Image (cartoon, rainbow, N blue to C red; front, top):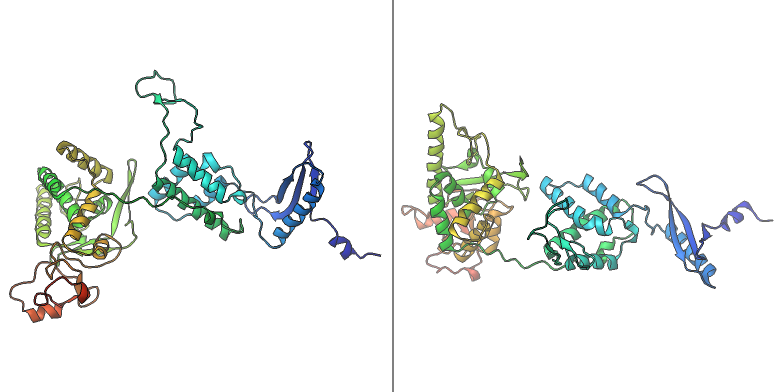
Length: 446
């Protein structure tokens, strides 16, 4: 006589159902779906044939083993559902999150949005990326007309035959990073047993080609901008420091130490359409740089102009006011998009094809050409608080130097003639290895 436990052990873990086409559908219970709360089944279809029943039994045992070893997807959620949850929980800056949502809405959801997360694999991702590289509009390769609007209209020269334009490698890599972050979250939630994004190969990183303005073009831009001294001050500071436009708009007078010659970047201005807000910097770190005497003199004149305008209206310019402001008392900040648009109009009048963001590359190019090493340049406009000198540097070629005491910041003008060489050696310590230093031993401060 068999025991109840023996009878339970012989019970099948799933069911096999014959479909009207003659194929067999295997179903194995895999628990409760954590997303919907419904019963979750693993299913597989076996084509009709003489060995269909044997193949169905084998598939049922394999699916049951996956459930026992927890190698099965625990949910029937689709890519759309996963991305919705991912975007709700992702701690991203607002503009970044909006750009990610736009890419998902335009490219991910229409193509693979209804695919189940457990069905993703390397072949699907490669086919997905190949479709994006072929045409950014995901066309079916049939001839058609791209109309200027979807509503009723009279066709004109703007309604042209469709031409496939590939999506850039940079945008495809952004899409890859979006899917990678969402699938890593799904793996932590144990929605999937393995991360299928590891089987995909994103396009290579595009080679940078910033094309900053030349020195002659930069001089023309500054000369044209100097018709408005306040606007010229912003353009000059962008060329000298390489700051982002949002960081320049967020600089307050308390961030400018004219006595010590130090400028601190702590905040930035974000903008989406017409709405603006104050936020953290892009790298989420503060940085301080030392300014050259010419920039300090221009900032002092700019401060005097702002104070004079405020005093004429019986207002007070406080240290909490913005350095670049449309308000007389500095209580309002400039909009980053307005800065870009004004700069675009400026260079258009001069016939120069460039943008204000390329001034960051101009600053880097000039510093590197003057001898400043790449690491110092990146730290000056990047995340870390390193002091860097201007074009020539303290030891003649712009090598990286910093004060002897860590994190001590001082001014960057050339050493005073009255200071002795011994005091200079004690005050400054060069951090460039001797084998890489291009300064004569008699001139170096090491």
